[in-house]
Length: 394
Image (tube, rainbow, N blue to C red; front, side, top):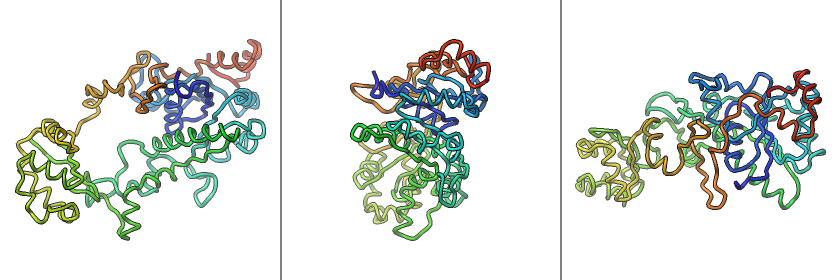
């Protein structure tokens, strides 16, 4: 029994932000019903690679476990009627239609709350419904550019780069997860649902720390710093004779222990490195001074030596290295769900732990008949919905 056992979620989202959120809801016990349009979630086709057994792309597989799957054509009144019946005992509706999309079908929050006052309705969109950008479409990479995130990512002196992961989409999914938890808690007191207006742009801007804080105080426009930290030194990737290592000596004590481990005690008496403000004024000099002391070390061995002395450090690993790492398996961050290898859930709860292995991602419409039957539809009514194309799948 997960923490969200008994919570029913109607998931109308596609692509990434919404599915990431609902996957974690499902991991923690919620009954998530993923409703896809007749053409399916487009990420089913975002490959290669594709799973041989189902033909689904890895992109879809990675964010859709622990959900039941059905397909409805909400362009048809019959499809919308099915949705309304499913909402009768639902706790959460989450969707990422363009603002106004649900309203044109008579399914906007102001309408739904009259019929379902306890329903929590979460919409994920690019920019929201109003304001100068209201109603405009938003995709992760575009919002990274438009929010300033791209401007602070990349090599020092170079142009900004898109982050290698879709951080905006994932961050919005996580923010929605937090908001839904708060809304469920508040509903216990008020008995009322509410509307969560989540946007990619809002979340992206909220992630601009420490760059926005630095700008507000200094007036200096931040720029890419490569692997280095804008506020902390040494906090960067350094070469060794083996794997590169990231060293994060964020305070004077850590810097002293770093120097002691690598045999660079002489640096401790250098006035350029006497304290953190001094080191931060001499970023290039400290990197140059550390280099000869690091050249005889292997990155993995040095990381272990530094961590043993409470200096944060780690070798620079690739995805294969990380997913093979013994600690990730010990922490259940690489698991298998019905034959599908997947990443685990990082929210570790003592009494009601997550279960990311409960169910593999659903095939298209695999639970349509079962869900309709649960909702009280007869076999004849289900056949009619299929015949009309309002409901699809098994």
